[in-house]
Length: 131
Image (tube, rainbow, N blue to C red):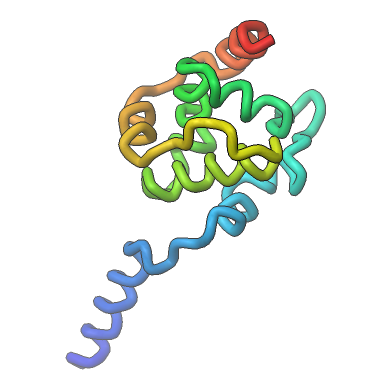
């Protein structure tokens, strides 16, 4: 009986810890790819493409905030550090450049604590601003 309790306790600890964390490419596959597609092109009329907007958004203070606050990011089970690594990987992968200021866990934590209510309107505003 004690061994079963110990086993269950160990499994709970492992399940709730970052022992199950993945590399950013795997986190993209698990967290983002289902909607944004493998190449970040999205689904026209339903899910926005991210490949052409990530870098321009990451270069704007409000854009950085937006990338963290969209529901898929802010409500994911990723830690702040994992989300920062994922955003950095996505920007580098889809834009083909490392010429941007990388997200940090502290920045993600600061933005993530604020709720983004008007997602579509904010995205449109940022698209207009980043041109």
